[in-house]
Image (cartoon, rainbow, N blue to C red; front, side, top):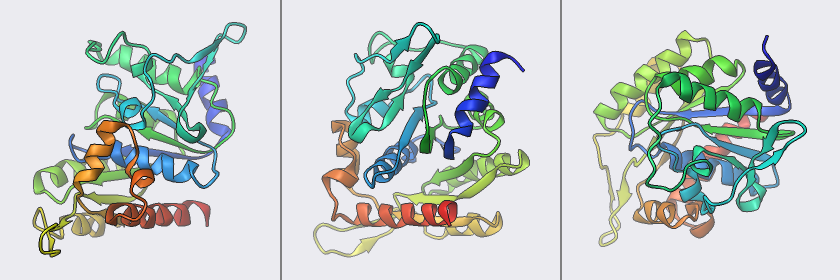
Length: 268
């Protein structure tokens, strides 16, 4: 076993619960779920880290309101670095810390991306944590495959909208995790519908029932249904997690119920 792999193993042993947030398709709100999950956990006094594994599209710093000009502190003797402390002392690591600007593309092939993921897991000094939330890019390729191989005891959460096209890819992702014998905690239905601001009626954005059926087909749990609210995307752009800005909103209440379900499974 090489030194970096050994470091990954030692780091992960200090973290009680490792959660990987994945989706088959982009645009389903996976990063929004990961960020607000991390903030929900750290806001109740738990020790939490969040790792942005989307090497070519790192958005977590933007959604957390962290200045990308901040840099991880390096320990020259250990030749390792410390994740940056974000809101509520949330330990945060992202490729966005290492690129010149938000307009700078990361034009890397698979091996380089996989090397970065390994360094984030093994060379970062995460310390003892209750939870590490890993936000993965869409799909079932390099970064996702590497994380699933490097953290055998991780817990997988799949995020999907009720749209059939999104569900087609989400189902592939669930199957991939099961083939690799990883624990799938369940699936979260995001943008499940919204309350009309004029008449108050609940309206389904997509034909309902698809996420529930996927959960039944794969024998996994439907962890929660997060409604669509314009303020959620606005707060992501402004760098303020919506659960902090709108604690009484329908989305926040639904999200807290979802987090409660996750914690009940892991901490029972």
